Length: 269
Ligand SMILES: C[S@@+](CC[C@H](N)C(=O)[O-])C[C@H]1O[C@@H](n2cnc3c(N)ncnc32)[C@H](O)[C@@H]1O
Image (cartoon, rainbow, N blue to C red; front, side, top):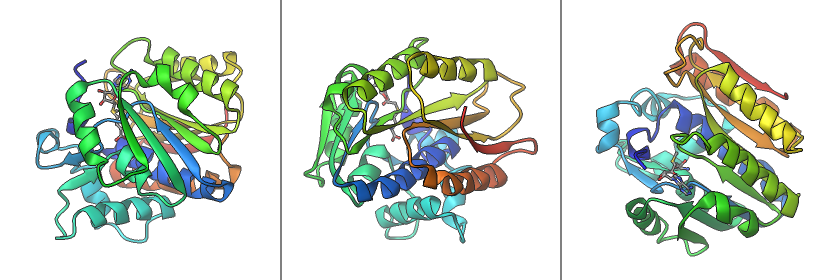
């Protein structure tokens, strides 16, 4: 297990994922107290003075977000959450999905799984102020389907360092929707080349998963498949009313942080 999210915290892909997540939670809140399960929780809180200062990815991500105004709703919510963590005005701390979810209105229970023991320990610490939130050390793919409850949300956010991550993400989503049809699923993926992503969408269809919405932020043309050229947040069972807001989020990310030739699109396969 080599992947360390601390190098990537606050990058453009986190902005798409975390703003999408906040928008989704706000849209789902009227359904009742929500249970949110996070298969790949990470550390929960990131010090941008650490590993992230070496990768410089947050400079081209959250630091640009913090300078912006007139943002689409979910990005403004994310900006406010980051501000709340950094009361002295300097952006040093960035929240991961566990802290963002645990602090979101309407969430009654959060369960985050983390396989890497030191990261799982950091997660427990990051959630200490949230009694409704639980950190579980273990494999999120295996455990999540039986822990999920409706109304609620399953977030699947793997590192994609293993060849079976796409397959396991599809299986986990399908098993969850089989056991708990009312649970909305959000799966983050990188976008390197189109064939890999198309294969993932074919996998969702083959598993019988319908009502799919793809939030796609392509920061540059997909000419180099070795690079993360963009990312997607693929939603299953999300309210259609969210689409304009999610389009505005990806438009902002691609227009502000992307190269010429980028593309922002919210679409249904
Ligand atoms: C992309 S990071 C998660 C980031 C987090 N969701 C966020 O948005 O703040 C992926 C995490 O999954 C962990 N991981 C890898 N395989 C796992 C598995 N099968 N179950 C649970 N965690 C896993 C890695 O150690 C890593 O910390």
